Length: 222
Image (tube, rainbow, N blue to C red; front, side):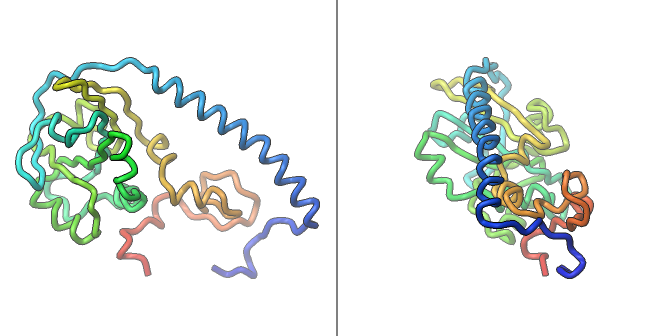
């Protein structure tokens, strides 16, 4: 980056900075409480029973939706964009998975996290090995799971609850709803330059590019 031609935040005294920071903190706390209230409302959403007998293919062989819970009560599924015949996975989906931490913390709260793609497992496994991921990844090749869950040919995030042998759908989000839970985006949002994309409301002269074009698979960055 050419810092000589990049606009910078205003330089102020420590006292002025602290005053501005305290004013912003009031709004941040208001947003935190609003997000807590939204999460409480989300926990009270109704649910719908899944009656269709979906069959998936995983490293351990064929699996039903119930099997994907791995014995836990809750299941979070990321619908990863990788179509049959694709040589590699979606760059955006890949950067999302790069942001997934150790799954032991989710497992400790009786929750399983997995990826599901329409590509056959023979395509998925080499790409997964290249990326170095340990997240369980299943193929939905040949079934209508992605379409039925609202992801279609795109990406999304679904949540399910198991009650005995019955499976219920409780939540789905896509687009910016998935974007919001990425650690890298949230960290960039704390920085002066933000995500550096043209849709952001940034001061004049801030470095910006069009969305998406800067994304790479993590082993393609130079």
